[in-house]
Length: 174
Image 1 (cartoon, rainbow, N blue to C red):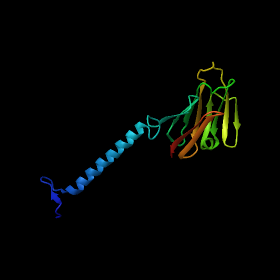
Image 2: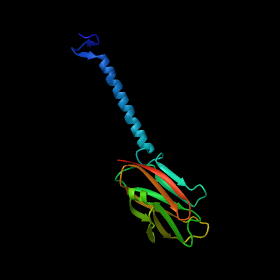
Image 3: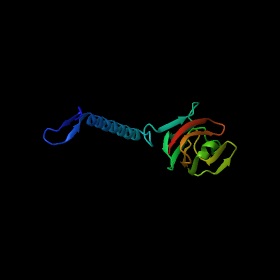
Image 4: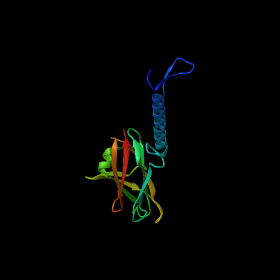
């Protein structure tokens, strides 16, 4: 008989206490890993949640603010909200642009409100909106809904024509 293996007192069963302790340790490690993954998911590291929700603001004022999710899943719709502040609307028009590289990585399915027109340039897509707001009042919120085309890091860039530019990053899980 091996030194670690003992005979059970009442049953004729061999037991290996060293193996049993290693098995218990592996179970505890597995339970801790599962708990960490659950906490990460609840916190937003695997999708929507407090750690995933982010906002980019223009440093010079309140003309543009973008709400987005830092972490997302491939093949699921994501939402990007652009809050236009005072000064974003000139002569009843707001011109919001997205970088073309970001727009290629994100298949844009819907824009709310619907733009009057979309101008395609070499480096950006410019969405033109009509808004009627009193001077100094917040203009509106523009919502882009799209689906990521690939997994990995998406580098977003959005701005107002002749106004501030905001950079943001999103990570898309496969």
